[in-house]
Length: 161
Length: 132
Image (cartoon, rainbow over all chains, first blue to last red; front, side):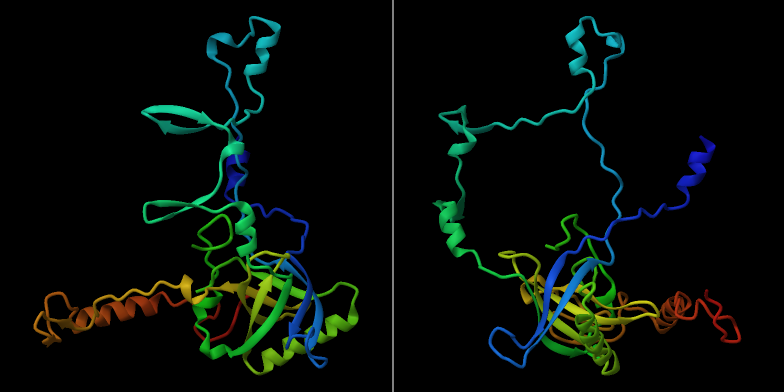
């Protein structure tokens, strides 16, 4: 045990198989429009990535008095993975009424009005993009704050809000 | 100002032409002290993000290091009261005030910050580097 505690003092770096986050062209000047534009085949791999501790899973711990299952089938609730079940409810005349997930739709609040926008409509409004890495300009390094290079990530998703 | 974890961009494996082309770009950026701003869409129909590409040249690997940078909408601008003067309700500017640091306090803070400078951490008193 002492050995285990001592080993915690040293961070263990996990070996990770490199998985590209982008594979395709690095372009300068729009090669789909101009002949003299530049396109280079590149691969992009994570350079820094938050090393998260392993996550725990939920399980049902056996009750002290019930360590020995009374019947054969009881073992099922002691340990094992736990499935999550969701129910959706709305308030109707003070009562909660269960609704099916299939009946739910997305809506946005415009003032106090609920404006329903179907998935089909949302898809039409979604910006259609093609995978690309296109250089749109060059900046003098001096003009870029050094703070740019300090990578801050305060979210687990990798993007910042 | 960076928004993300960083990634490195290398030429396609086994594609010498692409590797040389990218190497030229990396060296051109390096020699001219430039960084590139690029629009990145990693997969079809994903939202585009802005990334800054900086050249990184090391003995065994040359790559472009990218970090996500904010769109104008992502940046929050705040205004705070100045630390070196107090502006009264009537618009009078005071240079001496109980909320303002004295010259001694300024000096002390200046020295404190200087003492935390790690830029010379890896050099000894004679200025010789002792890293690695």
